[in-house]
Image 1: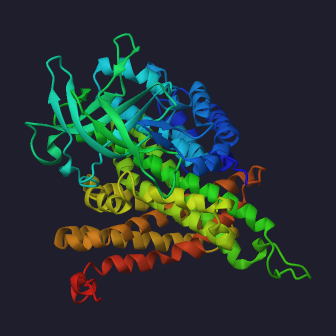
Image 2: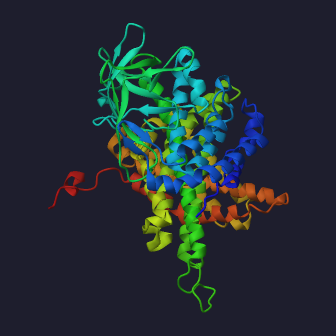
Image 3: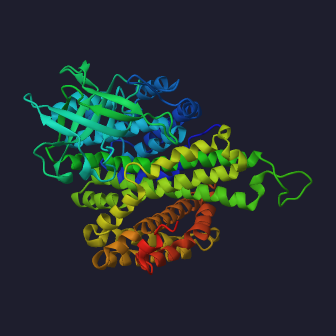
Length: 596
């Protein structure tokens, strides 16, 4: 089944949910207009549909291949990546000073969804490069910026993030990779890193590795981590490539999904040590790495949206063609399964969830834009707090939605969904990693309740809930009868989120274990409620357009109503589960004891 980038849905969300056109005109110091944004997103959609999407299935079948330290990408990947880079797609929101377009981050998030919907495995390479560019731009010396940023932004070099080690996954306190100071002001890195996405490949001339390591005299734990830049090939002062650095790919992993994306075991310093340069300050590497990780977390949430959208498109096409049973319209022959109520329920659930998650990702990107380019210091500070609050929700809720949509897509295909030839199973296999990497979703939930809810004395989350209530009030006052009980359901969910927020705040003070036990449920409640508000805003915008003579978007009202009536009613139940606290009677030790 062919895939088409959902350009219309993306632009409508940027306009109606994130408010990008008004933001460009009044709140952002941005050198672009809405027509420019629309043209860029449309062209990204064309490139992804025509060039990248055809790589998805063959790339999954062939996969990246490793032999004697060399990783060969599947046929076509290098050629398409070269055309992607030459078209300037690596520079969408990069600073103009180093060759970027300097467009709002919302435009880049739109493109990120488009690349991932076309091929998640392909899109992972620029995703990591973008994060490396952000960390380098924020903390690198001017010399490093001038030498490395232009070719990375141009897509001629790619970037990686090297955190994980065999004994150090989510807990970076256990990092053992070490660094030594050299007499020339550089460093030498020794150690092993695992799960390094695109750590080695044959699509570009050089790969820039950002590596967390520990100096011998560093304090223990994460306070003693430093961040280093270690290129595959050393770079001369004129930008030309020199000799091969002392680092290599030892192997690639054999994975459940994203087969065309090489996940590498990297070895640093088998001989004299991998030559590297400090990014930022010694023992302050985690601050620099978090710039990269936060960018990657929103991008991974957007991956969930992209893969969920592709799974929906394929399931919809299959449901229109596949005939089984007699439909409600009667007749002698078998009906397309899309006529059956339960198939309609699953398709509507996929579409509503994907569009809700898309809206959350766009709101997060809008906050990042305002945090960087808002016109006043107060606006930038408030936006930074909102971005911090929404980032774990965007990452975890949206990647969970990608999983759910892909699973429903397999279910709609029935037995054929379990057969690899249809391609439905690939979406399920590919999407599964998004809930795990760049901070597992449980870690995102803990971050949300422990670090983000207390922001600004709790005022940031209170304002978010107030904004959801305001949307419910707007639906109640100005929405048509087509919204049905949307206003009431959204208001009920906002009250449930408000109550759960107060419970979490109380648990943090009196019983932290209960706060942690309810964290994942709280994040889901947050995502559902905010997602419902996003769909309601889109529905209101569609009715406003209809009043001006364009009724082509009115189906969005029905989608908001479906979400509110069929998916949002679980909100009060989730709030009650959070209020129940952590430990059932007898405790988890007794319940989880081995009964064999």
